[in-house]
Image (cartoon, rainbow, N blue to C red; front, side, top):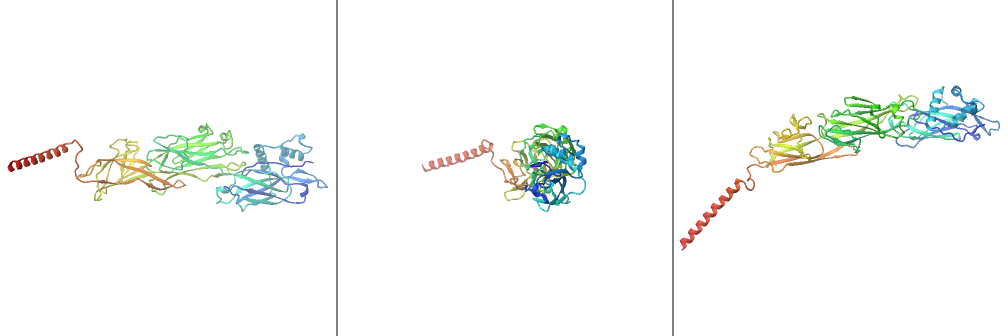
Length: 500
C-alpha cells in the first residue's frame, strides 16, 4: 500500500489542479475543496469551478491503510503512457507512482492539460462563486481531483473578474484548499518626450500627459512583461494602440524583450490611427517569466489636433489581448486600456490703446524661448503653428484683426515672445517684446485642469516720441536753449547800461 503525504500541482487560469482528499480516519466522510483569493485586484465572482476525480480511494478491512485506484475514464489515458513495470505491480500503482514523481511547474502543467483532455462525463462536483474571495465545492468522496476554472460566463463580466493565477495546493485531509496567487496581466503606456523629428527613444520619462506644438513628434512607450507560458503550446499576445485624429503614427515601432531587439520577429500592422503588435509564442517562450517587454514608437501632432480647452484633448490608448486557457489559446481576455494625453494650447493676444479701444493692424513676429522663428498660417481668422512653412521672419509675422485680436493655435507649454515690428498708424512702436509663459496644471489622471500665461493685453500709446540720445532732436533742443540764454544775457546787459 502507498500513502500520500504531499502532492503539489501548480496551475494557471483555466488550468488544472490535482487534489488529494483522503486519510484513514476520514474514510466514511465526504470532503470539500475550498478555493480562496486574497488579491484585491481580481475577483472570483461568477467563476465556475469543476472537480473531476482522477483516483478513487480503497481501504483495507481495518481501515488503517488505503490505496488509490484509477477512476473512470482515465484508465485509457494511463494505459497510453506505457508506464514501466518498475513503477508498480499493476496499472493503478504505476499510475500513482508516475503522478507522485512529477515535479516542476512545466511538467505539472503538461500533465494537468493531458488529464483535462482525457476527462469525460459529469464532474464530481462544481460551484459558481458568488464571492470575490472564496468558493467551496462540497460533497466530494475522498480521492484525487482535477479542478478546472471555467471562468466567468457572464456577458458583462469585467476583466478584473478573471483570476489569472499560478496556484498550488497540498493536502492529506478531506478538506483541501486552493489559494489563488492571482494577478492580472497589465500594460502601461507612457510618454517618453517631445522632439522635432520622428525619434524613437526608450528612455521613458513616465509621464501620462504632455503638451506639444503642431508639427512636433511625441514619443511613447508601452511596458509589459513576458507572461507565464507554463503548459501552453501556443499563446496570443497582441497589443493594439489607437491614436486620435490629431496624431499621425510615425510607423516606427520597435519591440524589445529584456535587452534584445525582437522587432523583426513580431507582426506589426499599421492601419490609419490603429497599430497592432503581435509577439509570437516562439519568441516569448525564449525568455523567463516577468522579463520586461517594451514597445516604443512616436506620432506627429497634426493640424487636426484638438486645442485646449477641447473636452476630448488628444487622448490615445493601448490595450493587451492575451490567452487565458492552455487548452485553447483562442480563449482570450483584454486588459483595461492604458491612456495618455497630448495637449495643444492657444496664445490669445488683445491689442488696445490707452483708452482700452481695440487696435487693428499691429504686426508682431513670434519666436520661442531659443529665439527661433515660429512659422504660422492664417485660416478663418486664426493663426496656427505650421510645420510646412520655412521658419523666417515673414512666415512668423502675425497681425491684429479688426477686433484687435491675435489667436495662435498649436503651441505647447513654454515661453514665447512677440516683437512688434509695425505699430498701428499714429501709435508708438513698443520698445520691448511681449513675453508669454504658458503653464498648464494636470490632475492625477493626466487630464489638464487649467492653463495660465497664454493671454495678454498689449497697449500702444498714441503720438510721437523723442528720438534716442544723440539724435537730431537733441541738437534742436540744445540750440533752442542756447538762443534763450543769449537773449537773457543781452537783456540783462542792456538793463545794467541804462542804470549806469
